[in-house]
Image 1 (cartoon, helix red, strand yellow):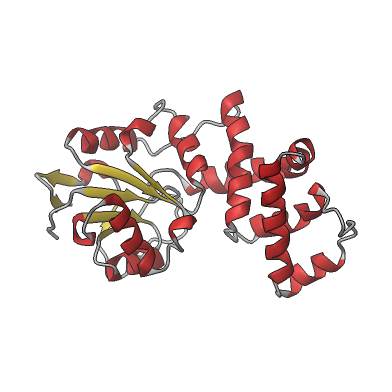
Image 2: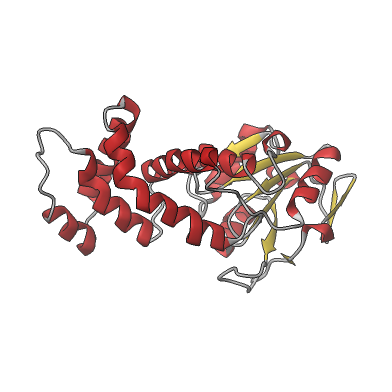
Length: 253
């Protein structure tokens, strides 16, 4: 494949960082600390706003399990208790449902974990060198992940290779739209001041690649050890970024 590429848009989980770190380290770390964190910070107006957003999402969720959890809620409706939403938050985590308010809360909990040294992001071994190489070539690097922008910046700011945040110029999360919708990629390209055809998006999700491809972006399927899916469908796969050549903007693998 060949295309003039000026911007690289990268997913995180299964693309630059192992799925296991997110699924087996970050998610359990936040899940175990939700109650204590909300209890400690429940008087913070920002946290109160997130709690209200979660409660509203819960009230609108008509799935059987969510409704059953709601029926068990014994909190005083006149004053929403911080811990009242914890069961629903835990249910969302367990079912990998990406509610924006939950992602925000997780990011705040992870911030404390990174600051204490409890958490260090294990990027794939080839990623730091690749990021530095692409940056030195003048490519614009950007992140698009379902994790909140603060969570993305924490991960790249506390990697085994040190703080890599300065290599990225743009950060996008679900506030830009769902990753399975083409309009999200149009919106991101516009935000970066780039035409979609000059953007390469790398992800381990076929649904995301389909959406980006529909939007006109170049795409590559990230096939890494430990990923749940290894079938690239109609897309070209990449297993190591040392194999990704961007010579004068011409993409080749």
